[in-house]
Length: 199
Image (cartoon, rainbow, N blue to C red; front, side):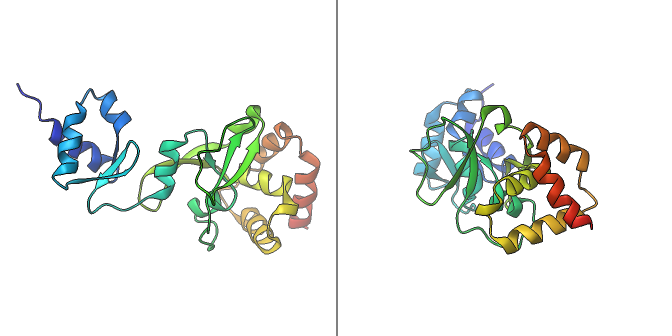
Protein backbone atom coordinates (compact mmCIF):
# COMPACT_ATOMS: atom_id res chain seq x y z
CA UNK A 1 0.00 0.00 0.00
CA UNK A 2 1.47 3.32 -1.06
CA UNK A 3 1.85 5.92 1.68
CA UNK A 4 0.47 9.33 0.76
CA UNK A 5 3.26 11.43 2.26
CA UNK A 6 1.78 14.76 1.14
CA UNK A 7 -1.46 13.93 2.96
CA UNK A 8 0.56 12.93 6.03
CA UNK A 9 2.29 16.33 5.96
CA UNK A 10 -1.10 18.08 5.68
CA UNK A 11 -2.39 16.24 8.73
CA UNK A 12 0.74 17.15 10.72
CA UNK A 13 0.35 20.80 9.75
CA UNK A 14 -3.30 20.82 10.71
CA UNK A 15 -2.52 19.32 14.11
CA UNK A 16 0.24 21.82 14.85
CA UNK A 17 -1.63 25.00 13.94
CA UNK A 18 -0.32 25.49 10.41
CA UNK A 19 3.37 24.73 10.90
CA UNK A 20 5.69 21.80 10.24
CA UNK A 21 9.44 21.45 10.80
CA UNK A 22 11.93 19.40 8.82
CA UNK A 23 12.88 17.71 12.11
CA UNK A 24 9.28 16.46 12.55
CA UNK A 25 9.28 15.09 9.00
CA UNK A 26 12.55 13.30 9.65
CA UNK A 27 11.10 11.73 12.81
CA UNK A 28 8.13 10.48 10.75
CA UNK A 29 10.54 9.20 8.04
CA UNK A 30 8.90 11.35 5.36
CA UNK A 31 11.22 11.96 2.36
CA UNK A 32 12.09 15.66 1.99
CA UNK A 33 11.14 15.60 -1.72
CA UNK A 34 7.46 15.78 -0.67
CA UNK A 35 8.15 18.96 1.26
CA UNK A 36 9.97 20.41 -1.76
CA UNK A 37 7.01 19.59 -4.04
CA UNK A 38 4.54 21.26 -1.68
CA UNK A 39 6.71 24.40 -1.62
CA UNK A 40 7.03 24.41 -5.43
CA UNK A 41 3.24 24.07 -5.81
CA UNK A 42 2.73 27.04 -3.47
CA UNK A 43 0.94 25.00 -0.80
CA UNK A 44 3.72 25.57 1.72
CA UNK A 45 6.01 28.51 2.44
CA UNK A 46 9.51 28.21 3.90
CA UNK A 47 9.35 30.54 6.89
CA UNK A 48 12.97 30.07 7.86
CA UNK A 49 15.51 27.27 7.95
CA UNK A 50 13.71 24.03 8.80
CA UNK A 51 10.32 25.66 9.48
CA UNK A 52 7.44 25.65 7.00
CA UNK A 53 3.86 26.92 7.14
CA UNK A 54 0.78 26.83 4.97
CA UNK A 55 0.65 29.68 2.46
CA UNK A 56 -2.35 31.19 4.30
CA UNK A 57 -1.02 30.40 7.80
CA UNK A 58 -0.22 32.88 10.57
CA UNK A 59 3.31 33.89 11.47
CA UNK A 60 3.72 32.80 15.09
CA UNK A 61 7.03 34.40 16.06
CA UNK A 62 7.10 32.91 19.57
CA UNK A 63 6.64 29.38 18.25
CA UNK A 64 9.17 29.81 15.40
CA UNK A 65 11.75 31.31 17.73
CA UNK A 66 11.50 28.43 20.18
CA UNK A 67 11.64 25.82 17.43
CA UNK A 68 15.06 27.24 16.59
CA UNK A 69 16.31 27.87 20.13
CA UNK A 70 14.88 25.28 22.48
CA UNK A 71 16.98 26.33 25.47
CA UNK A 72 15.26 29.73 25.46
CA UNK A 73 12.33 29.97 27.90
CA UNK A 74 9.93 32.90 27.59
CA UNK A 75 10.23 35.04 30.70
CA UNK A 76 9.42 38.46 32.20
CA UNK A 77 7.05 40.52 30.00
CA UNK A 78 6.88 37.85 27.26
CA UNK A 79 5.79 35.27 29.85
CA UNK A 80 3.27 37.72 31.38
CA UNK A 81 1.88 38.30 27.88
CA UNK A 82 1.52 34.55 27.24
CA UNK A 83 -0.29 34.20 30.60
CA UNK A 84 -2.54 37.14 29.56
CA UNK A 85 -1.32 38.88 32.70
CA UNK A 86 -0.51 42.21 31.13
CA UNK A 87 -2.11 44.50 28.56
CA UNK A 88 1.36 45.44 27.32
CA UNK A 89 2.13 43.96 23.91
CA UNK A 90 5.87 43.25 24.17
CA UNK A 91 7.97 45.23 21.70
CA UNK A 92 10.66 42.56 21.96
CA UNK A 93 10.73 38.94 23.04
CA UNK A 94 12.22 38.28 26.46
CA UNK A 95 13.79 34.91 27.10
CA UNK A 96 15.94 33.27 29.74
CA UNK A 97 18.78 30.90 28.85
CA UNK A 98 21.32 29.17 31.07
CA UNK A 99 24.66 30.85 31.71
CA UNK A 100 27.17 29.89 29.03
CA UNK A 101 24.51 29.40 26.32
CA UNK A 102 25.62 30.96 23.03
CA UNK A 103 23.06 33.56 21.90
CA UNK A 104 25.03 35.04 18.97
CA UNK A 105 22.50 33.64 16.47
CA UNK A 106 19.56 35.36 18.16
CA UNK A 107 17.93 38.14 16.15
CA UNK A 108 18.62 41.69 17.23
CA UNK A 109 15.91 42.90 19.57
CA UNK A 110 15.66 39.72 21.65
CA UNK A 111 16.10 40.61 25.32
CA UNK A 112 18.13 37.84 26.93
CA UNK A 113 18.34 37.01 30.64
CA UNK A 114 20.72 34.43 32.08
CA UNK A 115 20.07 31.95 34.88
CA UNK A 116 22.25 29.38 36.59
CA UNK A 117 21.78 25.92 35.10
CA UNK A 118 20.29 24.55 38.32
CA UNK A 119 17.37 27.03 38.20
CA UNK A 120 17.05 27.54 34.44
CA UNK A 121 14.20 24.98 34.12
CA UNK A 122 12.60 25.97 37.44
CA UNK A 123 8.94 26.83 36.80
CA UNK A 124 9.09 26.08 33.06
CA UNK A 125 5.66 25.08 31.70
CA UNK A 126 4.02 24.57 28.33
CA UNK A 127 1.58 27.31 27.36
CA UNK A 128 -0.24 28.09 24.08
CA UNK A 129 0.51 31.22 22.05
CA UNK A 130 -2.35 33.33 20.66
CA UNK A 131 -2.20 31.07 17.58
CA UNK A 132 -2.64 27.91 19.65
CA UNK A 133 0.92 26.58 19.27
CA UNK A 134 2.62 25.33 22.44
CA UNK A 135 5.75 27.08 23.70
CA UNK A 136 7.71 26.92 26.95
CA UNK A 137 7.44 29.85 29.37
CA UNK A 138 7.83 30.34 33.09
CA UNK A 139 4.83 29.92 35.38
CA UNK A 140 3.53 32.81 37.49
CA UNK A 141 5.58 31.91 40.58
CA UNK A 142 8.83 31.94 38.62
CA UNK A 143 7.90 35.23 36.92
CA UNK A 144 7.24 36.80 40.34
CA UNK A 145 10.59 35.52 41.68
CA UNK A 146 12.47 36.87 38.63
CA UNK A 147 10.76 40.26 38.87
CA UNK A 148 11.45 40.62 42.59
CA UNK A 149 15.04 39.40 42.21
CA UNK A 150 15.70 41.97 39.44
CA UNK A 151 13.33 44.68 40.62
CA UNK A 152 15.69 47.53 39.69
CA UNK A 153 15.47 46.51 36.02
CA UNK A 154 11.64 46.32 35.94
CA UNK A 155 9.32 49.21 35.10
CA UNK A 156 7.83 50.27 38.46
CA UNK A 157 4.23 50.42 37.22
CA UNK A 158 4.48 46.96 35.63
CA UNK A 159 6.09 45.61 38.80
CA UNK A 160 3.39 46.91 41.12
CA UNK A 161 0.48 45.86 38.82
CA UNK A 162 1.89 42.34 38.43
CA UNK A 163 2.60 41.77 42.14
CA UNK A 164 -0.82 43.10 43.18
CA UNK A 165 -2.63 41.04 40.57
CA UNK A 166 -0.75 37.92 41.65
CA UNK A 167 -1.64 38.57 45.31
CA UNK A 168 -5.37 38.64 44.38
CA UNK A 169 -5.16 35.69 41.95
CA UNK A 170 -7.02 32.59 43.12
CA UNK A 171 -4.57 30.44 41.13
CA UNK A 172 -1.51 31.66 43.03
CA UNK A 173 0.57 29.06 44.84
CA UNK A 174 2.41 30.71 47.73
CA UNK A 175 3.96 27.41 48.84
CA UNK A 176 5.52 27.00 45.39
CA UNK A 177 6.59 30.66 45.42
CA UNK A 178 8.40 29.96 48.71
CA UNK A 179 10.11 26.87 47.28
CA UNK A 180 11.33 28.81 44.23
CA UNK A 181 12.51 31.71 46.41
CA UNK A 182 14.55 29.25 48.48
CA UNK A 183 16.14 27.66 45.39
CA UNK A 184 16.88 31.12 43.96
CA UNK A 185 18.18 32.34 47.36
CA UNK A 186 15.80 35.31 47.54
CA UNK A 187 13.51 34.31 50.46
CA UNK A 188 14.00 37.64 52.28
CA UNK A 189 13.21 39.73 49.20
CA UNK A 190 10.05 37.72 48.47
CA UNK A 191 8.91 37.89 52.11
CA UNK A 192 9.46 41.67 52.30
CA UNK A 193 7.44 42.35 49.13
CA UNK A 194 4.62 39.95 50.03
CA UNK A 195 4.30 41.38 53.54
CA UNK A 196 3.80 44.86 52.04
CA UNK A 197 1.21 43.58 49.58
CA UNK A 198 -0.81 41.78 52.26
CA UNK A 199 -0.68 44.61 54.82
